[in-house]
Length: 194
Image (cartoon, rainbow, N blue to C red):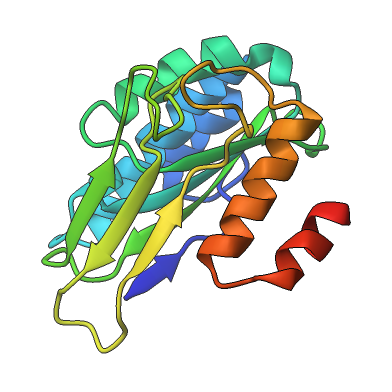
């Protein structure tokens, strides 16, 4: 099973010391570091059987300005150095003074197995990682009543072996191939024309 967090940012109450550190962080990198440090400590406290941030199965990162992405990414990598979860990152309007916000899906049962796919080179079959995240994670087993799931990172639809955006002909061929492999037949041609 899974547990979902609410939005977590510099204004989130995660205990007195943690909240004070996060609320005084001025830069996006400082907020990223303070919030992830506070969330990791909070998770370890409220879920003693858990593993802190290692229980994160999927991470959503919201930034007020994607211009800070490289710097925030370096900080994020320090907190998710071992088996990072799949992640999606978007730029979105955030409240004044908030540079970064997180939402996490956590494995409910620490005994559940999480398998992660992380390809860090150019491949003919998988998108290359450009940061500290896995392309996918599969949650299986554990003692929870609910089953597992497959979680994927947000990604740009690049051609894996060239890391280039597909042209119209490549996109149409991909749609036809996907529809044909799913048994789409005539529906494949309709999908390509759409």
